Image (cartoon, rainbow, N blue to C red):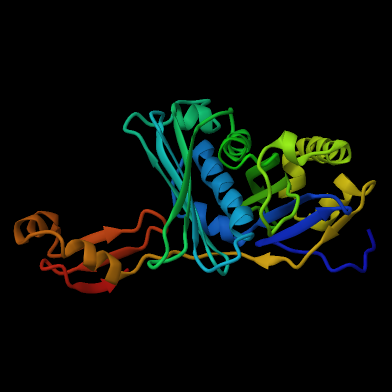
Length: 310
């Protein structure tokens, strides 16, 4: 790859196509965005990794949306993490959070199977108040979120998919550790943008199958350090993987951390409670509500009127 090519930095999703084939995909690299999401929580490391992986996944999927709206990933189960959520809003805003069960997270528990347990994955596309929501739900399958997401696409969309995700803390100059995350996703997408028949056997000829199997095998070789190392740009990673077949990249889409919480939304929820219920919520003369995503605290009067945001 020529050194003159401008390389995509952090907090971006880079779409690509392998040669002239129907194999398309996206690479995501998260720096400040994922550090902002994870650093405000005191999750065990494995839980932070799960939330970070979910944020990578929705960033790659959301960047492909052709309309204004929101993509929501949610997984729930009977394990030590009762729920993990990440969402992407058109324009590139991402956020994520998790809820832990009362028993806490056992030492050594890692990956979606161990943390969520028996449960499901739901992907929801919300196109706004005047449009119907689309939601697909599948069981949690696979030890980690990469495998569970592949199973989701296989069951709900019948789209051959390969995914690798990584989340970790990287020491920066001065010894400060910050969260980073990355992911790569490849899919077999013939006739992208138009209608097509579903099912791998229907859509793949011999050439298609060979190209897909090669691309999927290459994606499976990606290591965590290749997705996390700031010195390995998305373009360089793609060249490593697909230089024999050729790879084209398209315009990168920027992503950033942003939360949709605000005092007006919370006040609307508080308005559903009667005076006695609101009184039970009062501490030190005010009702305090903390956003589960960004940990921002909002204060309200005993009647439910906004006071300020801390």
